[in-house]
Length: 132
Image (cartoon, rainbow, N blue to C red; front, side):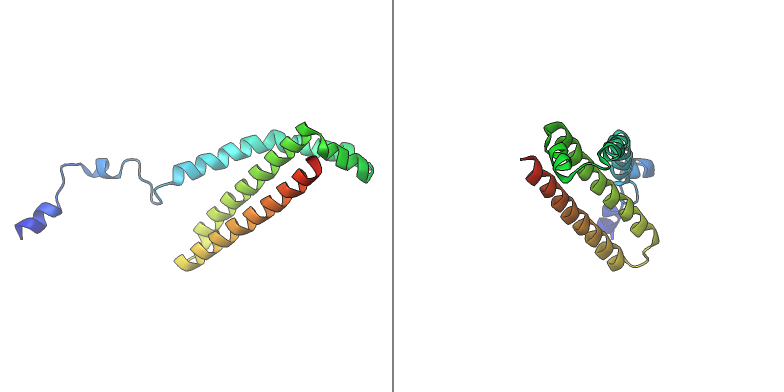
């Protein structure tokens, strides 16, 4: 009996035991990554939209030459990587908020992340095949 009491007591206050620990133990990092990727995507999306608008009506060869320029290829790869990371994180939040069963949450999150990784790799490969 005395040993059980000793195992259940602590010298730390309740606040000290929970400080820095959210319900998921990592929500702050996830929240910050959403904000950082959205801030980085803002200028990249504007650059991409303006570039796509200037390429409207261009030939296939001109478009491939544009993608093949090192600066454009790097910015395209950054846009692809950040877009799919941001998408996966955003859909993860939606799944966590609205899925009721744990297996549905885990399966949905894993499926979304797998799809985003595969699409990001395919997109990056397409850019690299043109640029290199």
